[in-house]
Image 1 (cartoon, rainbow, N blue to C red):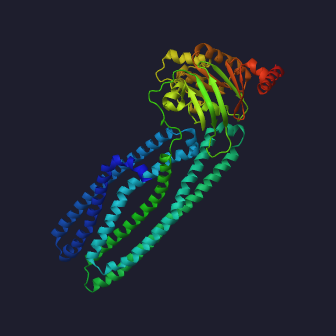
Image 2: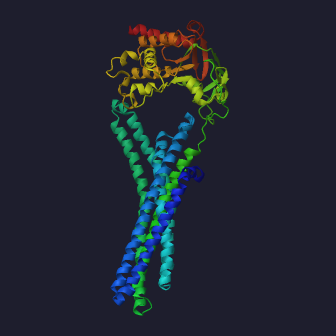
Length: 578
């Protein structure tokens, strides 16, 4: 954990050291003030020397101002170090998540990753900021005040022999109890965030099924669970304060009792007793600050472990075998004895013994029922997942020999779930090619039949999409995603059921544009409609993770019963509908 987090604090080591020095100096100068005050009482007031009182008073003001300056410096430096450390950890965590494969991301829930990037990191940076001040100031105050109080009266200092062990027992007991609770607290926060995220993302589904009450109850249950865990965790922490105050007040009463007797017998001056009270208060307050920091650190340790888990997660897919100069020469694709399952320990194979050759520039259609392995098959091409057995080749080379950046630049994929981002249509399209010209943008939109509705929009390409593309329909969103993919000018274009929301006429126009404008690009089209793939050069029929048949439309109609049944049922449906 420390190894993972320390590199992000190292750039601020000088700031941390300087802040610690300022915090220590602040405490030292503050501790000198009671000594001066003691002299004023025992010498200045006792002798009626106004000049002495004035000069020592001025010294007290000077010490207070110096202490204030060091305190301000400590606050500024701790804020700089804490915020900088937090920013570094967030950046490192976010960058590392970008390297995750889908299997890595599935190990952590999205809500948990968001919490670890925000709430957990915030707790860490607050602990560093407070720690630079309290974990230095409090021990310096504690040790110095104890030394000075012992110098004033060894007899009175025996009171500490009873108070300090009691305080230590209280702090340790509370720390042992709250440690597991804080870990659980962060997990409950994850669970609550997950509900909120799902509800806001799927708000249209929630409303269309009139499930607001159900989701409200689910949220209330998670919220109550978080509340109960928080009460247990912070309830134990809150108990720290009254118990410590009881011990502190008891110590002060004991000092007043024994100190009064010492003053009466002349063994101790009244000014020294006043100073002793000040040091006693500072000692007890320092102990309280130390205990508070330990409470904060207990929670921060739980947060640090969660952040370190993300930073320690090894990406399942890396460029370890890649050759930097490897270039995709063409769009040919080969599957050689490929088998795949999402979890290594799972007994069920998603794909089994796949052998396939796709020539460069060919159009390939893939049909199959739900769970037949269509999406899993095409996901292996850009290495969104890694084959467990066998080899996947693009351009005649194993995909592992390309860097992921270069491979994915050459393979453009429109996923089942179409995703657009906040901003304008132009900004979203430029994801395909950030240097695309106006002409290239419109050409891609024409190929995807997106120009039909874009030209009706008042702002055209500069129209705002809203969050997640809420300002366009499902079919329009699909066409924009296809246009974005085309802009990459890929060697391989994969459409994973990406025209399901468009009508058959538009679907036909898009396929015609593929034939004429993307003649050299290998096109793989997963579809539910036979009409979307029947004119493809090669059609694959997937069934239970295997290729149950392959060939042209005419060949499969003669040789493959699954394909024939699908075609017949769809054509009958069209006839009945007509």
